Amino acid sequence: MKFAEKSYSIFEQSVADYHIDDNVDAPTRQPYEEGSIENTLYAKNRIDAVQWHLEDIIRDPDIDPVAALALKRRIDASNQERTDMVEELDTYFRTLYSEVTPAPDATINTESPAWALDRLSILALKIYHMEAEADRADASPEHRARCAAKLAVLKEQRADLTAAIDSLLDDIGAGRKYMKVYRQMKMYNDADTNPVLYAAKK
Image 1 (cartoon, one colour):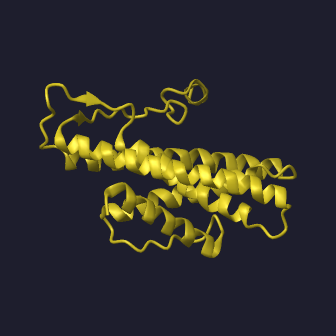
Image 2 (cartoon, helix red, strand yellow):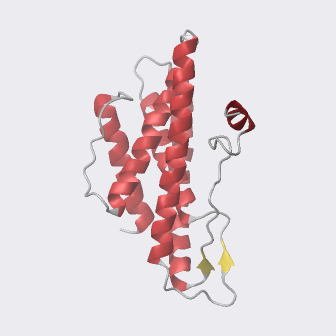
């Protein structure tokens, strides 16, 4: 099984495990050894799964404003954790391919392998939830049909993205492409670069 295929199976497992409790505060059911790439991939999707459901909760039109603010801050923290996890994955790939000498005509990709895997992780969540909508017993036939059509597109996207990621990794390993990672450097979480935050320190 190639890397992206294996990653997707781990993402699927994480999504299914989240829905055993279906609770954003439930403990993680981490099945993989600490320090393994499988552990990181599972933890990455767990962050995405929790955030997916936080985004659902915060859209409740009757939510208490104080609770909504607390949720917004939790989502912001989750976004930063997600970014950190993606950068950890890119560090793994840089180490993995550190001894590869790129060919003179090697090219750079538009995104790093880890950010492509980030999209695959989100896709696992989209497919799970669209499948649930397509099978919803209390929904209209029209709703189920629309969701079934969307599900087919998402599954096609999964096949394309999985193949593209594995092709990219093959190219990097063979020196046909090379990695260049730009850290996200998000400014709004940094007390030294967010004007609101550094003004508050004065």
